[in-house]
Image (cartoon, rainbow, N blue to C red):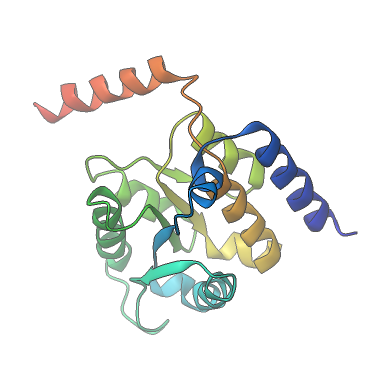
Length: 187
């Protein structure tokens, strides 16, 4: 069994045994999760492969990605991040997934939208913790890095993130973050 398959198996087993929130709760309640996804031109080819795989696995996707890898970038990542983030904030979609070359630009842009807690992840464990501890609602990643790890690994990370839920154990930290946002938006 490959390391990736083992990682998926153990992660999903852990989440099923220890988590009554997130996507698992929605599945048990018979709800289908709706995801907003987007990319910039740097991530276009990888994004299209990932999008196809997500749809094959039955995810309900709102595709806001760019139209081709040849589009002039010129800040396209910020535009796409705003569209996806607004779909999450408005509750049109449950979560968002954004992909650019590194994921950093998308995360920075998405976090400018009030109510968004965008997280940048390249691996399963940080993805789980970003949801468990910080209640992330938009997952950002980088195509240049994830292409090397492959679609299966990327799907394992996305599944782990979606199947995780906020535990509430870091509520003080979340409140401190909210106070920081309020304090600094009054300037």
